[in-house]
Every structure is written in structure tokens, then in C-alpha cells.
Image (cartoon, rainbow, N blue to C red):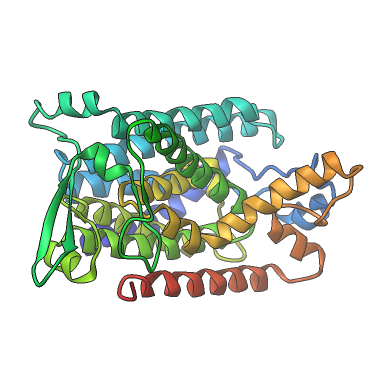
Length: 376
């Protein structure tokens, strides 16, 4: 985990300046959303020439760490690799179209959302289609994940083994030891849809929060740390038994990948802090959100993820509320501009103050999330 983090940290910092200069020569300036918030032109005119698509460097560093430090025969490694490549290609296409046309219009919203949802539902199909999971058991590489649960009945805990479908039909709530509910048979249709919602929603919410210098990448760093701790503990049978959490053999690979992402975020923050020298673009934000959402699904921590990533949830909800109020309340707006961080900008808050306060909120939520490991 530490070596993966150091690898991505060193790569992003050492190659960051050259990469930024290359992006500047390509004229990958930041596009401004003038359609929804015309006033953003005045606030963001000085950022217009700041290069974007910096997330490409983060993605390359994470994939390099994967090749160096992860088990390439582990199914978690494969799923995280596929998620990174898929969302990177999708975000890169969107950024390229914005750069080509010189405005904020990239891919059509429905096409972009549809491709995100397609990947999410393919992951859900793999996890909840029993015959597909069983057929892959015949191959040596990438055996489907399974789990063990220690049920305390009497003095000695009973070890319950769960197949892939049984594992991912269980949903856990923070501070609650037993599953909140278990979906099976026809209930797996709901689990299928929930998995798609978590991964797609996470990818989009991080993308929406990527509007201020260091805001999105700093919050991703915090959420990644919480999920890394859970992934590490879930891979250790004794720790899982002691803490009453699900034992997922091989989930240490998720911890390694999230550690690599933490290192990439720290290195990118070196250049993305206010005033930013580069923006990550959709090629970065879609990947970071997609990997976080997929990790939460694989670790069975969807509700914990929704709580500790509260900043992203609020940012996404502010956009939904703004759109609904405009359409159904005679074009009235709840906020001066959405996502929420722009609303505070228009109220006169300095950009660094907004970012720091959102980080503080993220840290508080992460602290409570970490408390749930023991207090359940």
C-alpha cells in the first residue's frame, strides 16, 4: 500500500511540470459553463487559460502502480483496472470535444450518462448473475469474490461462507453489526439497480464537485482513506472477526489501488492547489468517482460511502434541486448557482475558504465513518 502510494506520488510530482507544459502547448484551456451561470465568466476569466486534462497523469500513475504492486490475477485488480480505463476513455473523449470546440459542450449528456450506466450495470451483471460467476470458477485467473462472516452464537463464532451472489446481496449500515437487509432471488433486481446507481452516481458527483482549485481532489483523498482502511481490515480474517465486519479475501488489492489513488491525489494537489496550475478535467474526475463507487460496492459499504462522501452528495443534490426548482417553480432558482460551491462564491466567500471548509466537513464525516469500525 505504501509503495503504491509513493509510486503515484513521485510520478505525479516529478512529471507534473513537464505534463502541464505539454498541455499548455496543446491549448487545453478550461472551458466555462456560460449556459447555466453566465456570471461565471466574470469569476473565472482568469482561469480560462489554465490547462485541463491533468487527470491523465493521475490515471497513468495509478495504472503504473497497478503493474508494479498489485496481484494481476486477482478479480478486484481486474475490475478496478477496467473501471479506470473505461471512465478515462469516456472522460478523455468529453474533454477532447470541449477542447476541440472551444466551449463547455462536450459529449451529449445522455450519451455520457448512458456509457457510465452501461459499465455500472455490466459490473452488477457480473456480481448478481450466479451462472456467470459459477462459469468463471472453472478458470484459474480472476475467480469471482466470495466472503466469510463470523456469526456469534454462543461462546465461539460460527463461520458462514457466502458465494459471490450471496455476498453482494448483503447491505450493511454503519454502526450496525448484522446486515441491514439481504436481497436474494427477485430482490437481486433491486441490488442490480442499486449497484448501477452507486457507481454512476459517484462518478457524476465527483465530476460536479470539480469546480474549485483542490476541492474535488482533496475530498476524494479523504474518502479514499476511509475506504482503504475498510479494505485493509476486510482482508484480514482476525481483524474482521474481532471488528465484526465481512471478511473479503483478496480485498487487500482494493486497499493497494486506493492507496495508489491517494498518492496520485496528493501529487496532483501539489499543482492543483489555489491558484491551480492545472485542472483534472473529466478524464480525472470521472475516474476518481467511478473507482470510489466501485470500491464501495465491492467492499459492501455503499451506505458508509454515501455518508463519508457527504460533500459529493450535497453537491449533486444541489444541482438536482436547482434543475427541479427551475422547471417546476416558474423558473425560480433555490441557489444563485449550482453546484453548491458556486453559490457560496456568489455570496462573496473567497475560493480558498470554500475549499478548506468543504475539506473540514469531509474530515468530520470521515472521522465518524472510521468510528463505525469499532462502535457497532
